[in-house]
Length: 405
Ligand code: ADP
Ligand code: ASP
Ligand code: MG
Image (cartoon, rainbow, N blue to C red; front, side, top):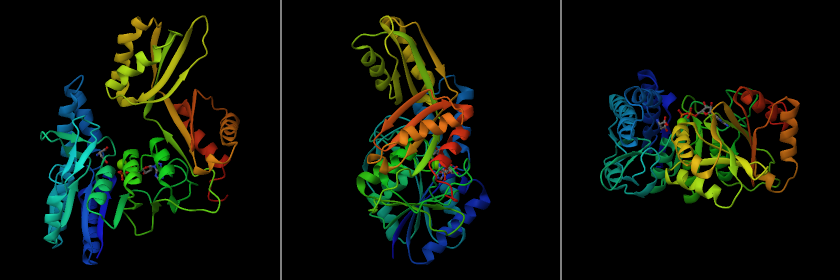
């Protein structure tokens, strides 16, 4: 008898019919003798719809109130799913993140888990019930509601799998597993049977939204093996775990991210301390900066460009405008029409030429590169958003990731 933690994403519970289907899946596993802890996301586009609502009543919705609102999305699906399971004759109980013992810090909208106290979950499990937990949320020690960042239900599932020492941590979604690129963009993409945690972390942080990068980080740190699979069939999916291969694959996959925007500060004086003066206040406001480039100095000044999440763009611009005069920069400009395209693979550690191959493929497709950054196992290029899909397909073909290759 295994302890199974499953997560169902928003598309898998988007309608009452789908919720009943998910309930049947859960009940069938329960009837095989497994103890089931199920984490649910908000139905369909509920989270986006709620954010849009917030933006209609407020020019700047306060983060605390946004969390109060967004946490409701997962509570709607948890209660409906628990009802649907009970309707099939199996005892089930729904629990919020707080009731499940997910204790976080107080950084609203991207709270970090500080502690896991699964006592209530264990108590309910002993009553032989199916547990349905609202994903994406936690509570502070002061009983404030928090959310764990977009895609945070993945993190809830991994954290509970760790806290409960689950045998399995399944992410049930609307694709059959992790592919060599987003299968909606590249129809020739191949499903991978295994992806290493390092590669998955890079793919996720590069925009492959199928798993939240923080959940992969948590799983890597605490040794939780994730199984990504479809909510709609029983096919084996993709395991996220360490593998020992005779020869490492050089490029495992291509990811693209339309969620970032570029900010450029023009004619910043080229002197010590400028970058610290700019990026310090951004960090203080919990704004994650991704890529940074600084042009070579011309007549004592340079252009400084960096990318932030689109959702942080307004706040980041405000910070930049606030210190522009102090820094002596000319102007601050933003470009939200960008896409980040990344090539990921652990084999890059020992193989040269991937960057050159990437630039050649983009050049052959006549795609201009705005920014470049590299890590040990990833190369990312920022291109214009209209070129995003063309770039992904060109790179997928150039690195011979297609089914036919
Ligand atoms: P859920 O609602 O289950 O959380 P998401 O929409 O957040 O699902 O994530 C699943 C989507 O991620 C897929 O429908 C697919 O379009 C996208 N995706 C992006 N990159 C990949 C990839 N490499 N492999 C599989 N899916 C990917
Ligand atoms: N509902 C949240 C979101 O849309 C969390 C999740 O789906 O994992 O980001
Ligand atoms: Mg998701």
